[in-house]
Length: 118
Image (tube, one colour):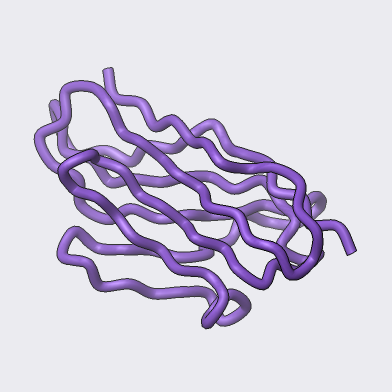
């Protein structure tokens, strides 16, 4: 059984930094794209950043220059380094991965809360 486990959320003051991690485990053959999404109260879930298996990345305009997504393929782990955090970054952050196991499926983490105080 494949699962994604996130860590690293918390409470931080505006201007501060946090690093999120998401590790995939189970019977994994390969991982294609990995990404971070977020959902703020009363809003739809939105893509924050994504990274392909080869390392190419894309970011939401709202986080460009402040957030960096990276991955360690040997550890089946994706990271999100968040700098210069703003109160509007407050949300539940979800890890996503396109994983080839006994088939090719989308997997989601359980979510981790990030709260940025002003």
